[in-house]
Image 1 (cartoon, rainbow, N blue to C red):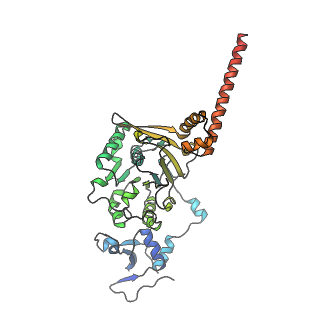
Image 2 (tube, rainbow, N blue to C red):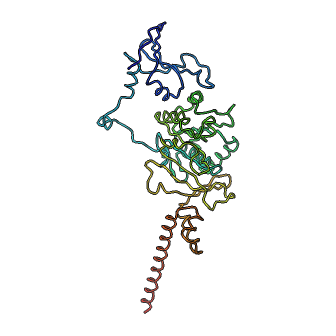
Length: 393
């Protein structure tokens, strides 16, 4: 039953308790408490910001979020907001095809996670993506079709190190004409730090800087959501609802996160439910600390990513004359050379798989491929030899 207005209200304003829909709507708004009031013919939502930890002082007018006007009861307005479309109506809608912010890993209105263990190269990749999207250029095997506005929020790195990496990127790729499209909030330069992005007041403080942004990069989740209990799926809800609101506004978001001890993204797996793409950086089994940033890129989840685009590859960063230079190779080609060398020593498929850190089925498939190509090469050599003999005769 729809809630009835409070008959004891005075002053021309009627307060209506939100019964069934209250919790759902307040969760959608990302606010913990509040009430709906009828002021004249309009309904307004008044968040109870004092109930939010560390909420800033606000005026009564600033706390009012407009709701659809209703001639009967507020609950009916909620029902209209969730009015479904039938199939014919949906198919008739003029919906713009989904484009790409960074092809093929970040679509328009896309939610993406990049994760790896500490020191693997997450921030190098995040900065490379930010620069490529802002300048409409290429990074690793990904292409930005056109320049877009990017906001990078870094909550961890020292400002000097962050600037040095960006200078190395810019020196290698250019793109100075679109440098103003890349904006950065450096936590190291912010008084008292950036704060907890799971908090509505901090989200509201960030809001003016999100206007016109196409790609928001959060580096990294742990440093930007300091009070979040990582293994608590319910604690993730405020961030997830905020991300979904940003997506509805047309924004794409890249979240940089840490891997846990088992190699998977740290904390609740619920984070991956709404993601379009999940990228994992892994160190090769023969990695040496002296190599710096060298890792494999694996697409663990990729809506619409198929074929060669979905294949893992290895990336390595070298700094040459102050420029960031990346080299990229197929992981399969790297594994193939190592497998051939190990098999030549007499190692079994099982031993090779354990040594390299890949499955036995992959080793067996590559072993067959190596043997087949060797046989074809030998057959080709024999045929050429026979032809030479015939000519001499």
